[in-house]
Length: 87
Image 1 (tube, rainbow, N blue to C red):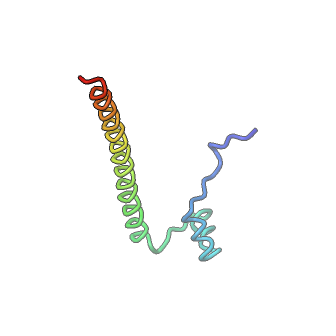
Image 2: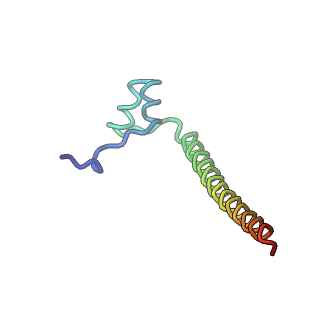
Image 3: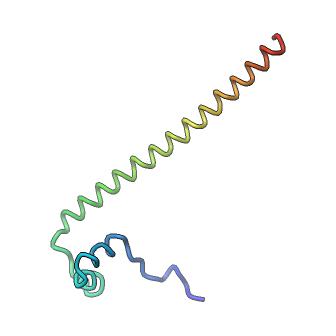
């Protein structure tokens, strides 16, 4: 059985790079040549991090909204129970 943690990881951007130009991927991955678009890629990474932050924040807010909705339903059910009992 092989250790999967030591297996190389190929990213989606590397697959895209290979699809665009089959020679550019080995130049960057195997030979270590850097891209001429390092600045643009840095901007892309920053944009991806900002987007990930927005997505995580939205997910947390959505969970909070569901929890508050559940709380409101429970309070409503309890209120209806008290009204039904005449209290």
